[in-house]
Length: 80
Image (cartoon, rainbow, N blue to C red; front, side, top):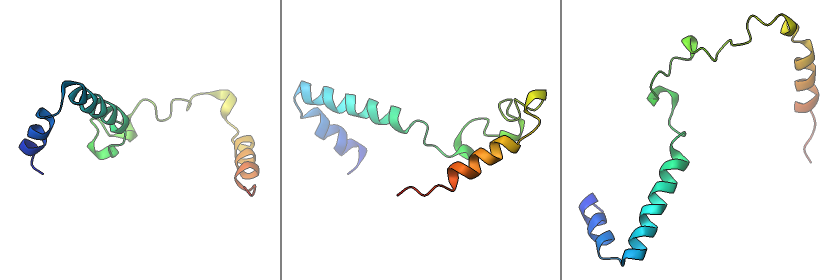
């Protein structure tokens, strides 16, 4: 179906149905807005993103042993 055919089909619907189609399109745009691959996003350069390494200078987080143990315990559990 071409874009024009879709538009023609939309325009023959009653006003309430057209409104529902527009609402569905808005919902789908919102739902899939963040599903783009990083390469397609503007400023997809994670190396220079301020979020990456934001805790780098935290002195209280120097030891990662506790988080490694936590992950090991949680991730090794069987989920029957």
